[in-house]
Amino acid sequence: MRKYVSFFAVGIFFGIVLTKSEVVSWYRIQEMFLFDSFHMYGVIGSAVLLGIIGIAWIKRRKLKSIRGQLIEFTPKNRSIARYLLGGIIFGLGWSMVGACPGPIYTLIGYGYSVIVVVLLSALAGTWVYGLLRSRLPH
Amino acid sequence: MLTELSQSWPWYVAGPLIALTMFILLYLGKSFGVSSTLRTSCSAMGAGKTSDFFRFDWKEQAWNLAFVAGAMVGGFVAAQWLANPEPIDLAASTVTHLQTLGIEKPGADYLPESIFSWEGLLSLRGLIMLIGGGFLVGFGARYAGGCTSGHAISGLSNLQWPSLVAVIGFFIGGLTMTYFILPWLLML
Image 1 (cartoon, chains in turn cyan, blue):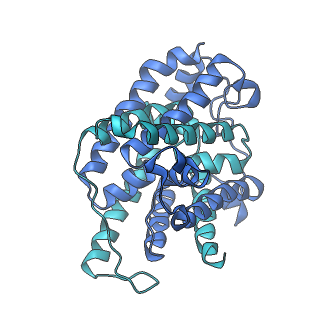
Image 2: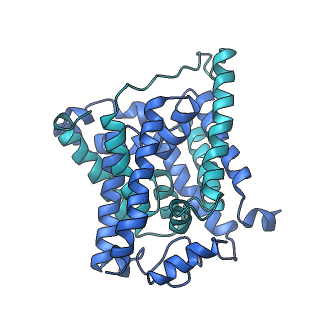
C-alpha cells in the first residue's frame, strides 16, 4: 500500500491544478473550440513547451528514475488510421462532456456526482473498443 | 495565501504545473496518461473474460489507479478549501454564443447544471450528452491509444508524430461537435 502513497499525492496535486486552472470546466472547453480565448492553448502549450525541453534534457543527460533505472520512452507505433479516427471520436466526446479523462475523475471529487455516469459510460466505451478492436482499422 | 490560491490560476501557472506532474511521474518510473486507467479498471472488473485486450496483469497499473483516486481527492480539496467565489472569466463572445443556445449564466459554475445534473440526465439531451459523450471519450481514447495527457502532453513533449496526428483528430472531432452538433443538441 505504501508504494501507492506517492502516486496518490501527485494525483491530488494534479486534481487541484486542473480545478484551479478551470481546465475541468465545460465552458473553458467550449471557449477553446470556439477560439475565443488563449487560456486553454496557454495551459496545453506551456506544458508541452516545458515538456519538450525537459524530456530532451532527460534523454541527453541519461537521467535515472528514483529506482536508479534509466528513464526511457517507448516510441508510438507508426500509423495514421487509429490515431486520426480514434482522435476524432475522442474529440467529439471531449467537446460534448467538456472533460477528458483527468477532469472526469476530478469533477466527481469536486462534487458533481452525476459525472459518475460519464465515467461509467467511458468504461463502457473502453470495453466495447476492446471487443471490436480486431475489426477496426489500426 | 489561501485567498490568492482560491482565485483562478492563470495558464502560465497551470501549464508548467501539469508539466511538473509529468516529470514527477517520470522520476517515479511511470508515464503520464490518464485514459489507460479505464482499460486497467475494465481488466480489474473481469473484462479479460471477454477480450484479450483486457487480459494483462492490471495490478502492474494499480499505481495509476492511485493517481486518479488522488485526482478525485484533488477536486474535493479544491472545492472545500480553495473554492473561487467569482464566476469563470469567460470570453464575452463565448458567453453570448452559449446564451443564444439557451444556457443560462455561462461560467457561474464549472458546468451547466441544466445538463450536468441528475435532473438533467433524465432529459433526452442529458442522456445523449452524458452517456453518449462519455462513451465516445472512452472508446476514442483507447482507439487512439491515449487522451489529452498521453498524447497532447506526454506524446507531443516527446515529439511523437502519432501523437500530433491524434491531437489533430481531437480538434477535428471537437470543432465538429462545438460548431455543428452541439448547437442542435443543446436546443433539444
